[in-house]
Length: 343
Image (cartoon, rainbow, N blue to C red; front, side, top):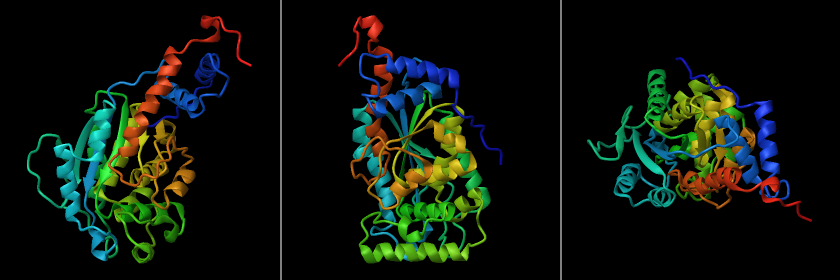
């Protein structure tokens, strides 16, 4: 398949102009901390010293996972479609946070094991009724994986804005994410797995054992797209495709928690320049996310011990993105304010 073309945001001349603009605001250099880094990054993404946030949107991708047959979740698979219904009814945390921050929200059925029928607010991109059980066979075919990537890219092309946040829902998807992390980084499975939906120590251990056995079963699979097809989920693949297209369009990518970051891991293994466009909203309380962020060089904006998913971290980070752009555009400089400096 043909991948989008993602170019680095590196631009020495523009970087110097942005640094000068940021340092000459009426504040001590560096005193706005990560907001200064964020303003600089967004300026490079948008190729301007006066960046703007336009029509931000969060896409929540939902899909089911065959690996739940191995007892890796504390909740039954039906919770996936029930939570999609909650999203559509406006009752989930992501609905609250997206509305609070003026962010459009779209829910995508990437592969839920349930038939919703035509619904307002739901984009039907179902590949199949859940993936297969990667403990015994590849989660999806190469063709299904390619279709999911293409659907994700096409969804981005429907968005009018320049900021996209990613969220997900899918019982069993922390197992898929941990498997992707294990296979693509070499980090031991035990360090990649966590409580997910609320597993106790024995359940977490079981999840790690399932991943180790599956990794041995599919031991010859190493290429990123093959790993994605073998261990991933339809929602994870669709997010990876959307991320690549969004970066090609020079959008700001708001990266949520562990599952979203696993999709980014795949995309970054394919095209490392995508990381230039990523804002890491928070560090999840899901075991493995911190180490995955370190692997990708991601510095999270928030530390709130979240592990809900849904794109909640992306929505909560959006005000910080606005703050970074606003101070760069609206804050006075020492010259304009006729201030000589601070002690």
